Length: 292
Image (cartoon, rainbow, N blue to C red; front, side):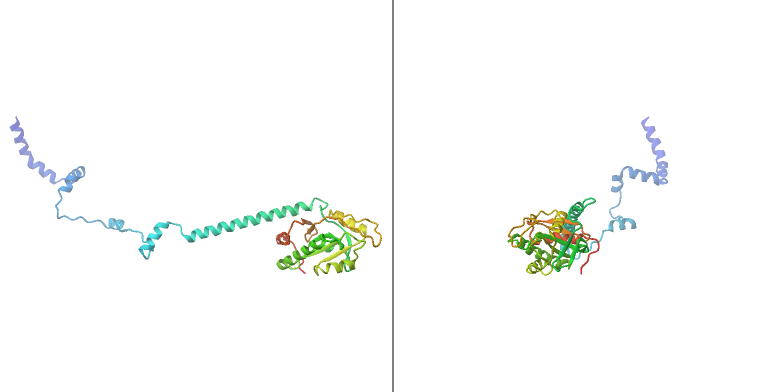
């Protein structure tokens, strides 16, 4: 039986070979099923070529704008950051910090000025009628148009008033240097019995030529002190030649160009610190201001 089966295979072998030769797709499928056999069956002298698309795919290498190897290494080490980017970042951060600090201080000054205005009746300031050291009438309307710095004192003061008037002169000079003539300094006497216009004029000339002195009757002085919340202890009936001291509040009252109270500056402020407060408020002002 085996012999007859082998004889049958020999008879059909030529037909099978011819059928395989006419069906190349099956050989290809066989090669895919066993790629190792297909690769080993290739002649050693056969060379393979890549298609044009494969050549373009493998040859696509992004070009770098490096001129030297050292530059390429330096760029590789630093990555996307550089000292220029770091410097720009620091400058931007510093600028934002300064800006936010300035805005915070400006808003604080605005709150102080707004709170000191009060509702209806002003907290500090108001109508008054006095006489300046030139003998002319002076009211609260004459203070409008500029910032004004009002101080209450008396010419016979032994130490405090001269010290504060020296500070007032220094503040006036620093404000004038930065903003021009936008600040009117005013000295109001709490001792009307002895401080006549002529006495005040000679007294203030020793400190600064721009200081403007005020006086009036005892009742007029009392009214303006009450308006500015200033305490003073001058007796109403003083005999000529009588010696006495006047106790009074020691503050500089800063008023804006509309006549509203802005801030009180005490003795604890130095000339530089007080000048900065005044200059900052002037810089914040958005209304009209007389610089003449």
